Picture 1 (cartoon, rainbow, N blue to C red):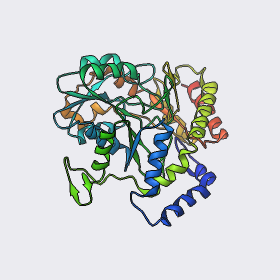
Picture 2: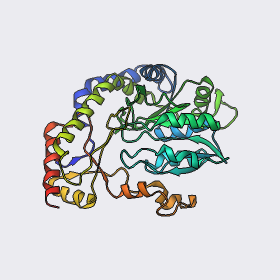
Picture 3: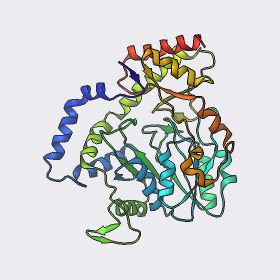
Amino acid sequence: MTTRVWDYLLEYEMEKAELIDAVTTVFESGQLVLGPSVSGFEAEFADYHGGGLCAGVDNGTNAVKLGLQALGVGPGDEVITVSNTAAPTVLAIDGAGATPVFVDIREEDFLMDVGQVAAAITPRTKALLPVHLYGQCADMAPLRRLADEHGLVLLEDCAQAHGARHHGRPAGTMGDAAAFSFYPTKVLGGYGDGGAVLTTDSTVDENLRRLRYYGMEKQYYVVGTPGHNCRLDELQAEILRRKLRRLDDYVAARRAIADRYAEGLGDLPGLRLPVTAPGNEHVYYVYVVRHPQRDTIIERLAAYDIALNISYPWPVHTMTGFAHLGYATGSLPVTERLAGEIFSLPMYPSLPEYTQDKVIGALRDVIADL
């Protein structure tokens, strides 16, 4: 059987009874849209982060888009972010009518180089959008200072950082709002799409709830900016309620796998393992390593029935779909160089130790023969 970077079937077998009960709970509730499961999950997810307000939406992309809109970002505005991210981060900026502006990333941990942000601010800048990438947080204190100094809003992209902490604070509690994805592969993932936006600002929360429901404040009546149908599904919400209770266990399992990888691979020549930035508590959404002969390694691992992933092989600014932004090759040199070296090892809580050993052994064999 081919080993892949993510699989849910073992986890499903372990949690099947609870998941089936979640489905039954929703189907027998008599309310299938914006009912008690959504409101319950919103309250519990906010409580997990120490309080505040949570609005469930249909996916992580719309969490970013509606988060920006709820914060007042729209056409003519610029949003500073990174190109080493999943394209949906940038698509959400575009969907809000704003223009993405990219800064480079740090060599050691792939996170936003916050030292470049000040120079990227223009009179059109409205928002800063750091991506908490691969399971750990961007450096938030200088971003908060810049946002306050320039009158900008700060939206955290937490799609890959459920349960992560930065100087003791949970990811998603350091900006004006925070967008989460519950896509199945995430640290907290559903059995389909889902997303949410956290905030402590009641006006932002009210905007979010209106925007996710067509722009309506009352049934059939749209006010202000028209919204869309972006509601979190009751079934996914109830599943997420059950899985939220296990989130800390999921994180602990991921960290244990990361420790085994570090022990088994730390001495390999040319292979650079993940680095946890100062003040961060990493949750290892993906376990991203680097090697200058990445493509050869991935090709040779196929002989061991191991299929690895690259997050991400094409920086957003190099995609033809974003050519209109005008970023030439070489404009983000660290991002572009690392895109040719990074790849992800299998990482999910139910990953068996024998599969971890298979990956470690195969990588050792392949790299020894380079």
